Length: 134
Image (cartoon, helix red, strand yellow):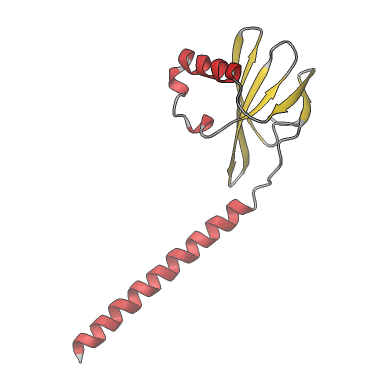
């Protein structure tokens, strides 16, 4: 009889702990789901240039981004550039590669810009496709 009660107590304790953990995870996931989401536009204007979204990597996009990571080996594996970027082309062979992550505080973005043979790493919060983002 005592063994049954111990097992029941153990199972109840495990069940209660599981409920507390799942409730805590549910609160976190609901906080993350409240992060504003936005779609990458087909086109946008920034820094006086028009940018056109590309559907995937071209050979030259791959070469440009590979060269950036060769020049900046510390960026390889960085969470700021994790995943597949959204690619934009501008005039005169300009390119931008955007990575956007949702955080509890809002969207956090990173961008590698290639322009006139030079690279620039940009980052900020908010919508990167609007002129007011930081």
